[in-house]
Image (tube, rainbow, N blue to C red; front, side):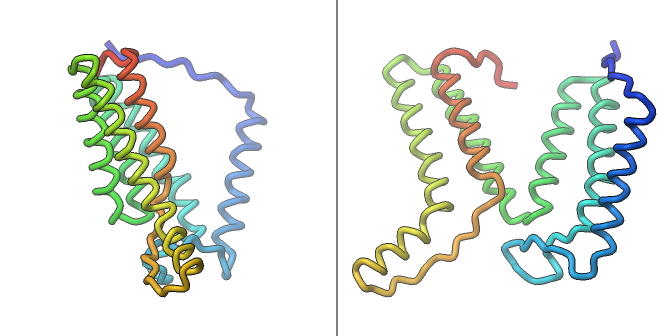
Length: 195
């Protein structure tokens, strides 16, 4: 049975205003010679994200993702969810593909911990939860605070330990705390399906 979603009908002037604003933003960003750059971890101009990426996102990535989702949802919920997961990984990897294994391993680890928490007896469930939350916070702490702690130790003890220059992956706090929320919900019995 095809999925039917009722989208609101916007008045024609509103649609024209939104399209005019998008067109203006695209022209403004694509015409700027000295555009603002978001530097990726390998900070050379060749692999930095320029404002023209905004145009690519708005007019290519977003429409393809939305169209693919609605087209696949006519056939299967699982296919459409898989499409969104794939599109999310592509979007995340566009910044720097080196962090995709970190993201995927974190997701797999937390899924596995969620299963362990769900099927274990009461005392072990709490131990699994503590282990999983601690692991997530250690990962987050490494990326966010490793250089800060080394710099502080260098300053206080007058040493010269080399700073790691760790690049913070985009969204690591968001997906770490989202996964911690999943683990807590699993511990409390609020999560019933794991597909």
